[in-house]
Length: 401
Image (cartoon, rainbow, N blue to C red; front, side):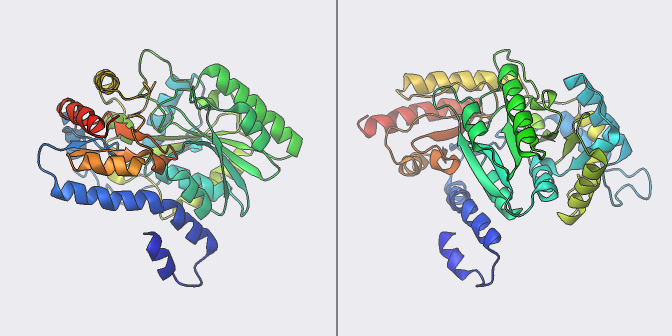
């Protein structure tokens, strides 16, 4: 993909070229991954992405089947944020946060990715800075660049994976417009505590006052239902009035290909009428970035479903314990889908390629700014985990480590 940069038209906007460059590593990997899958037999073990490796819930399938049966002539007409969908989300948010949301402050989107792009395009002026944690979800940088913004990556604490509050405070300038918080964090699995989030809110409030302009907190809560060990997820939006919540049902349902999510403006947010107009306009201008009619018709039932988190925790435990027994140094994530074992050689891409030759597919850590690591998804089946662990041990032993 990097070679294709030279093939772009000479008049290509700089922001588009830079966004394209930021996507090169993941797209190069996806091309490699597609080849692995094409050549694989039924014994392969797929940890590379957060895709399901088992069949979807029967109730999910029957919900979509029922939702596909039209009940009126406009069943599949243009849909925006339908009143019924807003009411469902509003009720769920009141249960989650114990705060009252206005229906007009909820915008149904095509997943969290669509929601993030809508929010960025609505709020970022050319040259505005957007702060986010490093290691990041691999599309933050490109989306910020594509919206005309300046990405500002702040490394998390390397030992705890917690937010570096002092570094964020120091990084805020007069051009800071958004600060993105992702909890549970992809890829580290860190779940941020209420105390950490209160401190962050205080920093953002003080900085907004200091620079005389509003800094928005964007809370990416894609994995908020996937939390382990009895920990409690606390929404960052509970502590800061100028917050924008981003959510997707794709992780909760483990169905990332059927996209539905939302943007929710905090009940205390300032200039809400103007923001409502900006968000609604941005949804249209981003290519009708609303959730589909089918998913909105099924939302009342989909809202009640969830992936089996206890099962995911068992898989996490087995994978972490097994990798440690094989000699790998690996974290035990507090939430989300991913474990991050260190690679026995410095070149994580080379190690991933070696594993692929034995039918074990992983994401090399450098793609998520964690060189010398693998990102392995616990959405892999139990059978895949059991097949993969002896291979992980043998490959490590074969490298003499």
